[in-house]
Length: 267
Image (cartoon, rainbow, N blue to C red; front, top):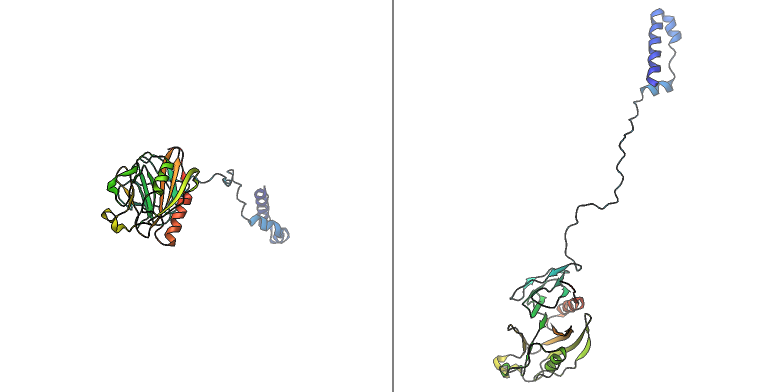
């Protein structure tokens, strides 16, 4: 409508100019400034019929970078050698077949570990990889200083029988078992140190406490201490053994790993 009106005004001005100059002066009065500005203003852009996209409340479908954390269960690597494979710091690792008890722990920085078969899981600082272990069916030697004399207790012993056998071995310092729980299961804690003759009097210069069915042994050294927990896991005696060797930082890591242990359900 605004464009048609000003077209008529322009035609009228041309007609007046053809008749006389005086009429031009008379009829050529300037258009109101407001109208001139309005005529020269560029037309406003037409409103789009397509509405602007509204902010989405749905999270982006792009997945976040994958990362392992203590909420994700990673399988403990398998292998026969120690110190085993490197573990990711802060990740939770779980034992799998062939180890029959499903347990997990959070790996401290710089640790390694492996499942050595159906009777043992080894882990610890990568320098040795066995400062913390989980063992089943140990055969306790009658005299650890002379293992050739045979065993006093064999595989399949109950948790109570195993505790009594360990605390009564000749050559060990006196220890008092402490009943407690471990990750929700009944447990007995003992500390094992040498207190009798020096290992120079022992066969092959070693003090062997026990042997596992596939041949792995637990050897106690002079000036060495072991924290042992015998845990009754649904009738099966699980030995959780932690070395007391190493500096304060290593001991703190071992304790952190122990505190993080839990028994998992399912598979």
